[in-house]
Length: 175
Image (cartoon, rainbow, N blue to C red):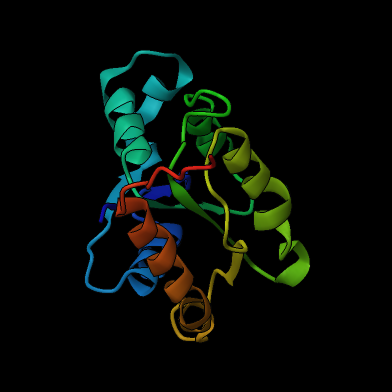
């Protein structure tokens, strides 16, 4: 099982990164996620073909579960995350990847942003978005129990979907 966390915060080693890793570890306990902190890719995100960006893109495309996380900036996810998502082909770039949109904010005003803004983009580039998005309070996510409650509800679904992906597809005879 490959679990990856993609963080679109312009500040390196951010609370967003911390929250995203906590979500990934809660959804797939015992599996250490690979972390891609997009700010470390720098100007390579502004074009196509940068080797570090290509490597990050490949790691994401080959993952079974990816948590995409962003702080809420101007009522949506960051331009940094948008630049990375633009690297993927529409419809197929994340084919076979279970995606979880996570956003952090100061208050509940933008609580629907993960589902209304980030999830459609993940679906557009082929991701499987079977879980609802998760919005976290940026100052209290570590102790408010929201991540644990989300994982209690959705970890069995993640396990079922990712374990099912490992099973070979059986041909059916419709004769």
